[in-house]
Image (cartoon, rainbow, N blue to C red; front, side):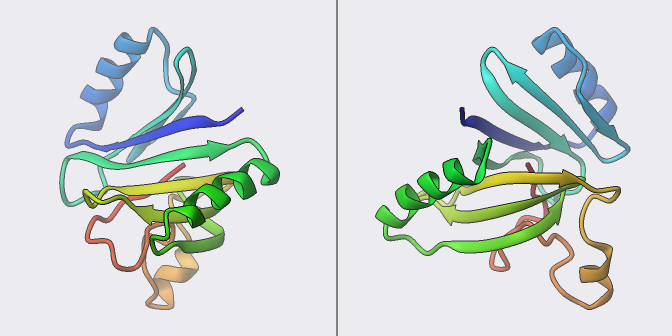
Length: 150
């Protein structure tokens, strides 16, 4: 079953962890010094916050697939929009490696559709940063925001 993904950019991570833990009635399942994530079942949401973006507020929305077949189904819907799609295979971001498709809605909001493959020890891919590539490998190259995540 698919899960809605919401990623907010925040200024004060600790304050927001306290706020959202109280709001959701549970602690995040992932916590780092720059990132926290809750995997809620009611409502079924992957809710993430980080303090890595240049702007606070809504960073991006997304749909998390539980398996490759669900991701292929989501991709068919993305194709039907006829909007440009950026595919990322094995993207390293938010302490997870994922296969992803990015699309931007008519309002300019980035939508990330993804299937998480495995956890990794870094926020993103340190090799990509050292090679001069996009330091936020999960984010489309043309996006001005600097965060990502699933």
